[in-house]
Image (cartoon, rainbow, N blue to C red):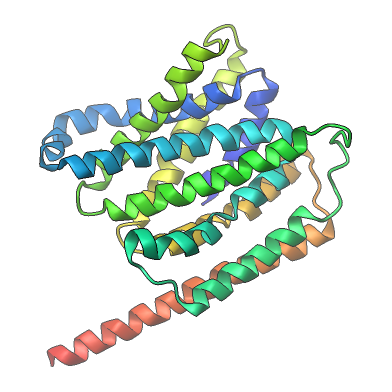
Length: 298
């Protein structure tokens, strides 16, 4: 979670160095892919032979939704505040409540819905607290940035749900490698061919931030979400990932000097409590099931 929480602040700093948002989105994914490539090509390549056509379709679709998530979310950071972007992105568990059963057949329990709503209320405190003074009230870009962050939340929800559906088809390493490759190419290739995105000529510090995004938030942070999908329902992974809002706000305060209003601090407490309650209830249910299974074997 710490690794992922640094992403928004570092992406903003890279943007201030002049790196295009789409280069950051596609570049971080392809850097992570490049690091994983030797391991996958040497030890895991045979696993892809077991995939059926339906699995390939899900894999490619999942990768494209991840690419859409990063493209829209990082672009939103150019046009709205860090807190606003992180909040709207944090609505992904709400989308997952409505999508989990139709796609996965996993029912969302009332405690999870309650925890999600409490976390959402916390997000509302954060977004509507004073502190967006640097935005131009005559500009529609903050609203567009918020809309892009909301779209990124929907894409992230789909990405986690499709990833859950693919569990058991591939091990974690080949799965994240293929997902990152598809996602990176789905962002990078159209951006390079259809826009004036420049790959060279940027500052050294900008490229350092890009490499950091690929190695830390992407390779360590997002890969841990995919590992968690093997052991938890997608909705719980989505909820835990929303703690990023708190970490990002702290990082933004320290580095970018975007000081949160006291309302935002109250909102962070609500967000934490909502996530904690939903996952505490899940852990409680898992322990109960484990005891029942143990008793049945006696």
